Image: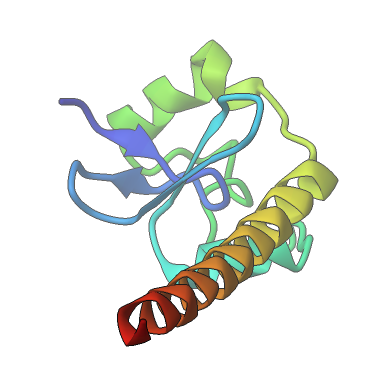
Length: 114
């Protein structure tokens, strides 16, 4: 187990905390809070917000964040449109699952009557 960085604000996300979003192309996107997740879905730029570590790239706060800044995974950019499409697809899939489960339950009730 190791610590990872939030994909929006680059703060440390400890194991068992935050939210992990896995896209269709097997890309793992970590979020430290729902605030970061919602701002990413709304396609906000993290460089605009003062509270993000991306805003203060030149003035690193801790050695860990400095290490993350120079890692290759830190520089990789992700497609926000793909992220939005993935979240939308997950919502749509959950609605379809609920609809299918309700249809299965109706069919079971019909079969039990006979």
